[in-house]
Image: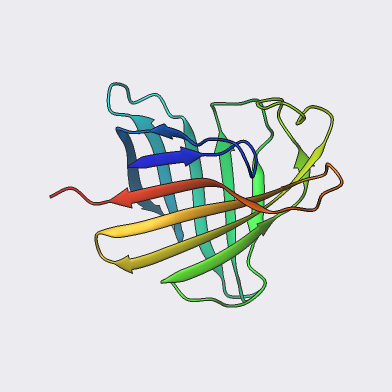
Length: 146
């Protein structure tokens, strides 16, 4: 798996290769644990499931790489397993990039599956810096290895 991160709309991407995503079902939730190929220590753990009562997808992400509280999100529409869009509650931006400290961050994640062996998670950020400019901040590109 490859993780591409851009700290701002005009910033150069940082690319992390050799990541491993392990998935398993925990009840009705898909659990994903992300780690490097060298260690099993989690970098991120997330859960995705469909809430039939609310008629929406629910998602929670626990990030170990940076200091943020668990982040929860939900879909606005029913969506399909091939394309799910979830929106996170605004949260305090971690000070990982210039201009981020002391600002709120809004995030939307689009999970797209284009076959049994390829999926992407695109995370669009809007930093509360007065520009209201969204950008593709994270792309997790999953490819199943056979």
